[in-house]
Image 1: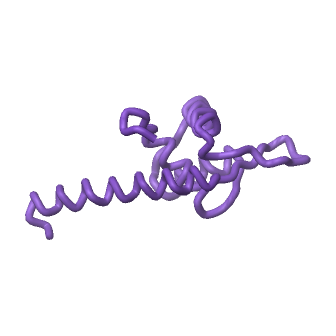
Image 2: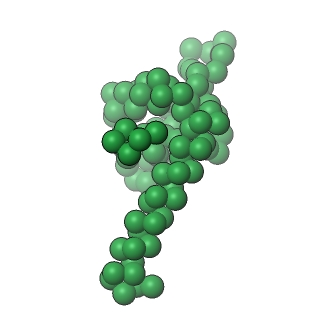
Length: 101
């Protein structure tokens, strides 16, 4: 993915949530709120899920329930890994410049 095609912070939180296990939208929303103290609205959550699905980073799983579970794809795992490495490089540089490391 090109740098100009980066996703938003909510998208990264969704990918991180799905990196651990498959879950439906409400469970993703709860996980984000619990771990980051950020409450995503349904529109923000499902808008980001739609973009991630179109990009091929997540997929909808078959379910008999009305709740649709989502799974991180291999492409999504690779994208998330790249984003985490980039974020780590940025924070390391910032910490160095602040004299923290």
